[in-house]
Image 1 (cartoon, helix red, strand yellow):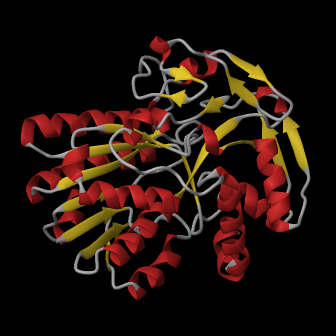
Image 2 (cartoon, one colour):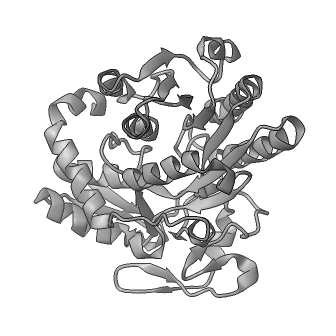
Length: 353
């Protein structure tokens, strides 16, 4: 069997590739990546050591897929991940990568006759709906108090039934459009699929750039004692996210591949859930503990476009089908990121500058 991973030199893609290589010793793993994002080049040695085949290619270029072999499973990890993409820069790149790239990926999946696991995002949920949900302000965080079933939002998080009308950022729109296309490809061409809407992912090999994950970014800037800023919602750092360690995601993907028919056609929220949430100011304290360092943190009260006060994944739908549950705490995730960054700081400095 062959498993192809697009975006396979990125943080999530390369971590998944290594996890799958170690779980399925008799399976060929092939990754495709354009290496555009700084830091992805560092994954090449990691992939090569594990015996994973790397193909340099761009999902925006349909002809690059001709270099890929036939496969039984395709995991689509390729995306421009920044929710701010397109607001301060031309939106063409995020649209071409996340949407046109998805079109090319689906065309390849159709030709190969393979099954598709699409890593989507919690950002498909409308910003206004999330920000208008009832909440209370606690000493270190905001907390949802909403309980109306029709809203799809409660203290337990956001369900997949949350209404999707409204704006969600250009990034979120490209991911939702890709989800819709995938559903149409299943009905029109029999492309079997699973969609995982991931919350905030974190773990080793996340580079710490501002648009590549808040946990790594916050940890890195404590490690280097660079100044940070609480932005929006009063400038107090009380925004809340649930955090999923990438190793926990890998465990789920392995189970989904092993028992694909159980999940086929489904769309699932996949996040840390209510037990693995953290606010920015709480994350600051965790980073101080993990790095034994402090850094200056300023405040900007003005909200940024596309930002949300709270996001928590309600994992009930995926939990009903499997014994999978997140295992690693936010504290453990921060510790893992901190240790990896400290051990690899010399390799990371050229990327970070």
